[in-house]
Structures are given as C-alpha cells and as structure tokens.
Length: 374
Image (spheres, rainbow, N blue to C red):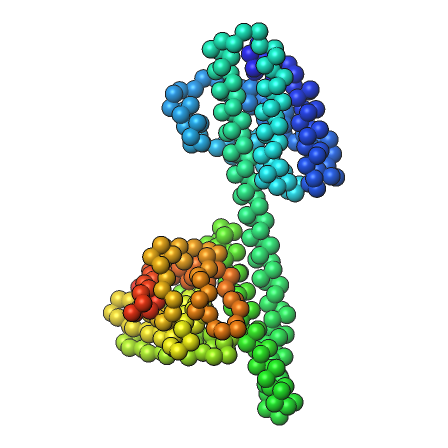
C-alpha cells in the first residue's frame, strides 16, 4: 500500500493519536480545546501525502536532504508554528509533536506493506524528507513569533521604566540640593543620581535595540550639530553614572555637520561607558574629536585587558559582553551587552564606520568615522 494512500485512508485515527499526544504537552495544552490541539494537523498530513507523491528532481532531493529547500511561509506547518507559540508551546514540545507524528504513521503503515520494494523505500525517504521540511518551517515560524513577542515586551518595558526613572532623578536632585538635609543625605542623593543615570543609559539601549529588532530600523533626523558639544554632554552623562571617572577630552578642526544629535550622543556615551567599565584603575579614558574636510573622526581609548582578535569580530553583536577583568573594584557590571551594537547601528545609519583595535601597548581603541553632509 502506498504511504499517501494509507495516510489519507486512516486520517482520523492518526489525528486521534496526534491529539492525545498534544494533550500531554503541559502547561500549554492544559486549557486547549480538541480543535485547538489538532490545529493544522489534518492539513499538514494532506501536504505530507502530496509531498510523498509529487515529482522532484535530484537537485530538489539534494536540497531537502541538506535542509536547503525553500520554506513555504503560508504552509500548514508554518501556521502551526505560529499558533503553537501563541498557545505557550516550547520549541522542544513543537519538535516532539512531529517526532510522534512520524512514529505514528510509520508504525501503522509498515504492517500494511506486504512486500518491500523500491517504491516502498522511496515512500519512506520522501515521507521523512517531508516531515523534516515541515519541522523546519514550523520551527522557523515559532522562533520568529517568539523573537517578535520578546522584542515587543522589551520595548514596552523600556518605555514604561522611564517614568519611575524620572522620579528617581528628581529625588536625587532634591537630596543633593544646597541646604537640604545633612551630609549623609547628600551622599544618598549622589548614589540615587548615579543609579538613575546608569539605569537610564540601559533603558535607552533597550529601547533602541527593540526598535531595531522590530523592523523599524534605526531612524535618524539630521540637523546641524556641534559634535564637540555632544562629546562634552556624553562625558558629563557617563561621569554622573560612575563614582570614579577620569575622562580626558581633546578636539581639533571643524566639528559641525548634519547629524542626529541625540543618537550620536548615545554612540559616544556607549563607547565611553564601555571604556570606563573595562579600564585599568590607574589609567584615564581619552576621547578625541577630529574635524576633517569631509568627515569627523571620534576616537575613544582606554588601557585595560586586551580584547582577543576573535572577540573583536563579535563585540558589536547584540548581547555580547566582554570579560570583566578591568571593571571598577566592587562595582557590578551594568552592561546588557547592547551598547556596542547600538553604537554600530547608529553609526551605520549615518553612513559611517566603527572599528576596534586592541593591544597591550596601545590599549583598546574604538574609532568612529562620520561623513559630513552639506
């Protein structure tokens, strides 16, 4: 008996086993109806049966065996992945459903095969290829949906944290105001202000990361901007968040151009924060701004642990954190692993470049090159 004929002729009994297994996948399946548990299982089985019978070239067979077949974005398996994510299923549970389906079909079909022929073997190969393709499509959709949900949550979280942070900033300003409280009150106020500044920096990174991941890109609004003023503001911002902070700023040339000021200040702040966090205690951080005829070059340098060459290729990726060997003593890491990623995204949105070099003799140097626009 052909496998496709068996599947179509025993559809209901196969679906009953699918449903029974899906019901064991807790907690997602706990409150689901029978219809929801079956989801697109019938349509997937019908697609699998058609896939076994359909003609394919050697090239197509080779691509399927290597996982290179083009996914069908509107296939039953793709929709199934989306709906399972919305129901709270994990990736492991999703894959387990297909594993159980494969076992159910083969276990029920093989006793019906009276003679193993080349056609029988071909049916088994094609069926396994079709199952693997369905798994790939379903996993991709579940992953995309999970990532989108996570990034939306982070965006909402970052936005909502701004209000309580604003209250912290106001409290810190009040406690450090002249003639308010005692010396101890002033010390508490300084701690509140440093903590608020650190948290605000992290929230801004979180918001920009979420925006970039949700497909809206990194929007910039260009205006005539004095980059030296941005550097001064970034130095003040970073020093406000660190109790011990030595940053030396130098400049040369014409430092005005068409840039998105707030975004560019965040680039500078992120680089300085990274440099301060990983510097050696007995060295200050330096930042230089150089105005050239067609571009502005910013360089941030610190002396600290050398970044290995292989790590230099990855530090601009999101959620990558450097070794904490050079962090301030007694101070926990405040990095989300997003700062350098955000710096790169904003720099590239300005059509610029950002690079990193690190050696024991010269320290770690980040260079940002930004073309001027007329």
